[in-house]
Structures are given as structure tokens and as C-alpha cells.
Length: 222
Image (cartoon, rainbow, N blue to C red):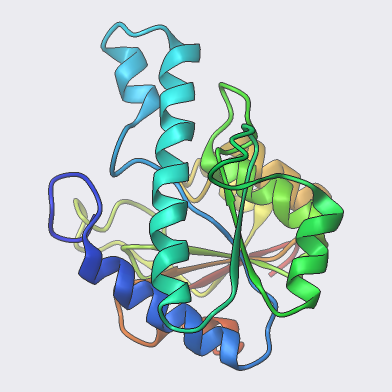
């Protein structure tokens, strides 16, 4: 949403798409999982009295809106893109089919997974981890507004220390807010590396995907 209070900021979407296009140009196969918190947050709506299943369904539909915005921005840069949704909506996007998604990536297309897992009570983090495992991804890159994982909230504590690398067990035992515990446990069980980095710094996505040591790497052992 960029500087806006909510919704989609075209300039921010365009900037992200430009960096994704640079990564795509290197030949790496890319799949994206995009959240919908800029439009609707199911958990907060549920806390205010809305029934959780309905709130989560609205949140999943919000991710489809963001996915379509990103698809448009990528294709404006000549990057072939496919959106697949866990909730069927054939007139807008393909249904999620694992083998078809992998085939798209083999052909050089960027695949955007929308609508989470299609089920309530599962976060975007869990959806991203699940899709990464299904397509055999080498790693998950979590784009955030902070430069990695800290021992405490850097927005509140100026003396917060950033980890260059940390194990999944440490993340869980210390209660660090990297991803939800279900997603972290799934990564740990499948030995799937996770890189957390600051997406607001220009060029960071390309550097992260190129293997440069930016942000924090979460892995089996440190």
C-alpha cells in the first residue's frame, strides 16, 4: 500500500514489479505469495466481532486483488505471469494446480499464488510455506519493512540486535515474530531455508535472490 493508509499504491507496485523483473531476467524461477493486509485483515476483523471464517474468506479475496495488480505491473514490464488461486474464480485466474504451476515456471513465467490455502485459520506465511514445499522451492524470501530478524522489536527498543543467521529452533523457543509458528515448524521439518530482508531498500530483492548476505537467514543449524 506504500504511503497510503490502505489499498494499492501503483508506484509501490511498479517498484516491486521492476525488481522482480530484474530477478526474472537472471533466469531464476519465481513464484510469489502475496498477502491482503493492505485491503483487509481477517484476524483484526474477527477480533472486532466478525465471524472468523467469513473474515478470513474476505482476507483471501483481498490477496487476489493484490495478485492481479502485481500481474498487471509485471506484464507491463514484459514478464509473463500467471495467477493461480486456491479459491476457484475461472474468469479471473487459474485454479491452483501444482503441476501446472511448476510447468509455468519451467517455461519462464512468474506464478503468483493467491487466496492463501483456500481455508480459514491459515496465514499467508503458512500458505507461502506450503506452496514452496509443493513446488520444490530452494528457499523462501520473506520481504518485509525491517532489515531482518531482531532479538526484540527494533521499533520499540533502539538496542535491538539483528541476527545474521538463526536456527528454526531458536526462533520458536525465543518466540520471535518471523512467521507464525506453523509456518516455521513446516520449514524446519522440510529443511527449507528462509531469508528475511527489507524490501523497501532498492535492489535488495535482486541481492537476496543472488545469494548476497543481506537480512537474516533462518535455517536448521547456525
